[in-house]
Image (tube, rainbow, N blue to C red; front, side, top):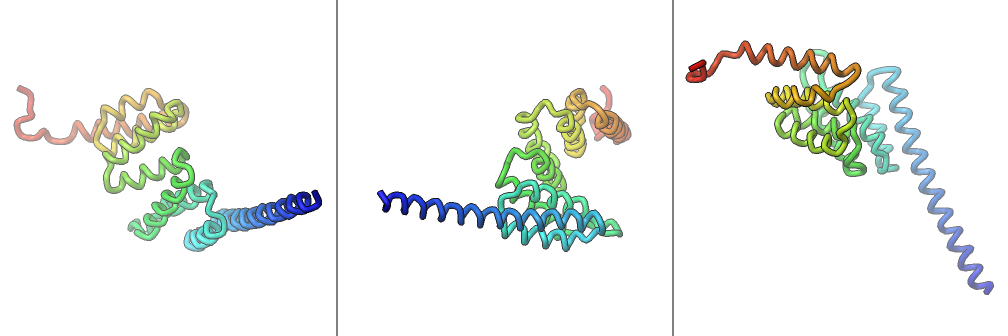
Length: 198
């Protein structure tokens, strides 16, 4: 009996050490993540924030919230002050997005970031990827506002018009204005030879 109690005590001690180590790692990773957010609130030092989050992820690779946040920070800072795209920032956004999606492939912010990154090279594929997500999370009006934007980029104004009816609140006017401008541009395009009225 004493041996059984001793074994159970040893097992509980080992488990408590493992959980304590896990807690320390999670806490250290969270501190680095929070310090990165504070850093960017005070100055636009995205490279230091990226490095801190990289360290945080090595310590505790389970926070898809951090992946989403730093991925969007890299994406929104992808242009230099001259307006040129910084390829390293785009690559960092993609890497963080992929890490986050590996942890939670239904996280809305990560799915939107993924679609926006894909839209840079393949708007039609980005729209298809986003629509697959919206089928799963249909009743969020913001999702349809993103669909309007991606459909316009893909040149599918019919699909953009269909999505607009589901957009509500503050996003509606912005989405409607984008769609109106897209239709105006479409009307100004010259007709291809042989496509005039018969």
